[in-house]
Length: 258
Image (tube, rainbow, N blue to C red):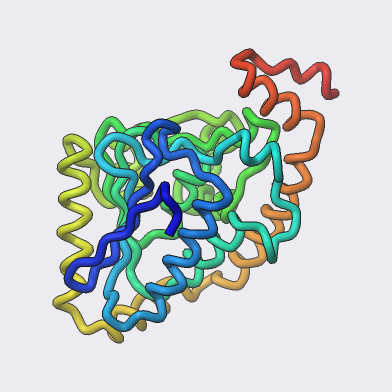
């Protein structure tokens, strides 16, 4: 297991905790690979009834590690670690519960769209700043969010890259409940995840499959299309300027990439 991830098992619950606090749990290729492996193994393990993903009480994740992405941007969807993780979560047959506090940036927000139950702290800061980095939406967010929120609100989040709070996430249906702080959020998510130990496992799996079935193949195609365009945009002059500016802590100048 990757040094920046912590795995705990308890009463049929597998908890994956992002554990890179010095980098606000920024995700590296190695972390993505380890998370995909953990999901695949848990899906095959009959003793696992539910999967809980968290970053702890302070921070969920600040998104992709920019320096890691710059060094080796994903190109092949079949071999890229980030797309392996996306596939593993998308295909996971058992309930996935997320506990989110602090920052949830980029895929830190879009992965929540593929979880079954999401609990957030009220002051959690969620954001999908893809356009700000010269990129495009990923992981099905270009389809899921307009359907969930309506075009106007989704446009604020995806075309303007506006952030929103945990309280708003709960109001809009992205999260199940907003709680007082990170400790309460993690405790609630753990309580709910453990409750699957008392339920019929095959009935839960069948119910999740039925709920996810409508539009599933279309969503799979959208995720692939987004992934291809995202990979292309990572190599675009706009993205190079934006990511370089981010690393240099300055405002990007997109006139240079026009």
